[in-house]
Amino acid sequence: AQTVTQSQPEMSVQEAETVTLSCTYDTSESDYYLFWYKQPPSRQMILVIRQEAYKQQNATENRFSVNFQKAAKSFSLKISDSQLGDAAMYFCAYRPSGSARQLTFGSGTQLTVLP
Amino acid sequence: DTEVTQTPKHLVMGMTNKKSLKCEQHMGHRAMYWYKQKAKKPPELMFVYSYEKLSINESVPSRFSPECPNSSLLNLHLHALQPEDSALYLCASSQGATPSYEQYFGPGTRLTVT
Image (cartoon, rainbow over the protein chains, first blue to last red):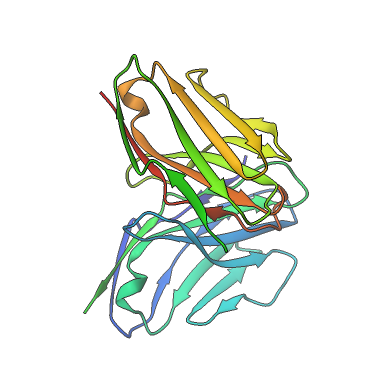
């Protein structure tokens, strides 16, 4: 069974600084997708970034980037130039390709941005 | 329009009540999902509809009954709920049910069972 582990229940970062949220996963699949979702206090969850396992290049979306280490089964999220609006619960999620199996979420990391 | 709407935003119901949650999207998505989320926990998948047919039921108790009247609308009918069913209920949709498609989430309905 797939598992997703986020070992940091809470993190804080100073505004304009950089923070990295960690995520590890366990799977026997070779092809899959990894996601970072953000859920602000208003509760609407949005997709921050997505990585396809067969792509070696790390995904980047503006200030958000990932460090994908397939052999180590690690998928960390780096937020650069942190803004107050980045404060949220961040969930790492996994989903195998070519399968009806759905998203497996990690337990989440609550990020606080300090002014 | 990348919006999934859910009504009501909040719902309080007794254990003998019957109520329904509604979810709507107009993005032409053919897959729709219901999730249950407890405070400070990740969402838990309940149901998946693909092309208006129920494709996944994650062993959800029968007091939760989903319905997909058309490709834009998803309902969750509630009957004889228990206090432990109190949670945030999230709806999501995606272009298709395969992993390559992003899921768009609604804001949720905060349900309290008294």
